[in-house]
Image (tube, rainbow, N blue to C red; front, side):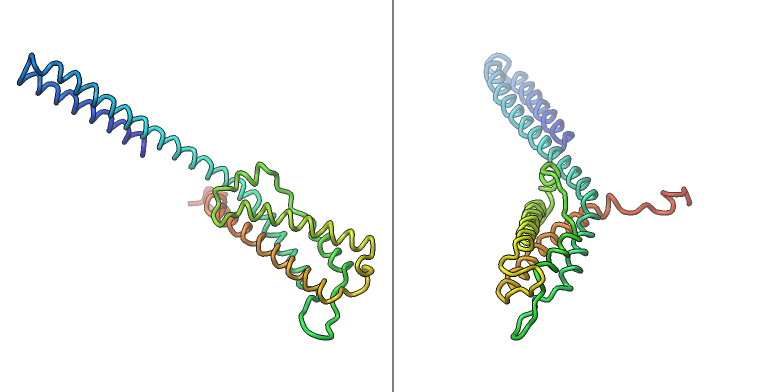
Length: 219
């Protein structure tokens, strides 16, 4: 409900009160006075309630609009980084051998660690994640989980390489271990891809590249 509509409702209520009271007093000057007071009090109460509801709705609308603007701003900042990270992670892990089937030679833990180390990590603050909450498809929650899962994978493979457990870093993984890592990487990629897409969509219009006219003032 807009602010103008709220004002219109209040004004209309006052007009109705005045018109009804005037009519009642004009027809029955003496007997209608008490009824007019009760009538005006009741309508005044109703008008106040309507106005309060309208103002509350308006404030909530403004709050949502402000939250969406902040979400779009944060999305515009994160979108390039997320898109690049997803491309690097997908390209790097695509070169690893986690294929299903007999007599497969799987990649080593050292090779997986090298890919994750080269991709680096995604740094997103809690405030930025909170700001992304209005985005669809639970993008903020999925991004938070993706970052956590990725950091956990990195720590685990780093420990595996350092300790040589369950196999030395230069020895191919066992089949079950390779398949487990393959599934985890796919899950993390899917989470990052959803978050990157929603950030890109949120920033597509407000943060689009400037036109020639905007850059150079051309007609």
